[in-house]
Length: 192
Image (cartoon, rainbow, N blue to C red; front, side):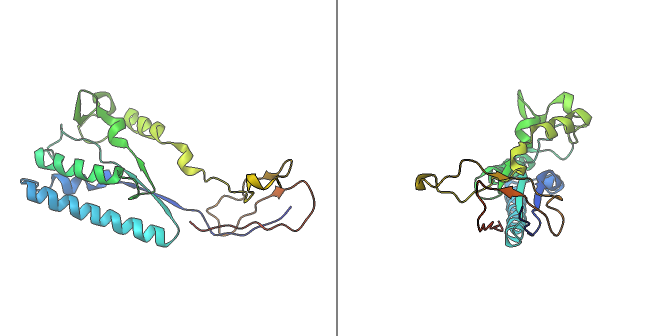
């Protein structure tokens, strides 16, 4: 058994709904909505750049609809859809968690599903549960590269790469692995 020390693996999820205050605050014209959308996108871009510079994966959650709330008007909706389009665009965040698609009313995409909220803005317990269940958990499992070239003909009959312990949020971790025969082995960890 070999032991490897590596840096922590951190994932940040940006819940864009925190931006809805900006969406509803004085959005009374298309130019103001465009400006607010651009400012939110600029802020999210800075978060992504900073996260990536520290080898942190960052996922964006879309802004949910809020038509039944006083913040809502046609300009706040324009801003929301613009920001959501940016969040959904591949390459901006490492992944998109589309809470908008999960929580919106199928009959009116500008409103939350009635049974998921009680004020037109905030999810209730059922809404939060639905949001949690909509998250693709594979986003939190990183693929393991064995470094074995399948075309080389040098595949071992079996190998084992165990789960690290303690969890990746500690400053060091132990990863167990085994191969068919005893030999010099190198396990390289890459920062993402």
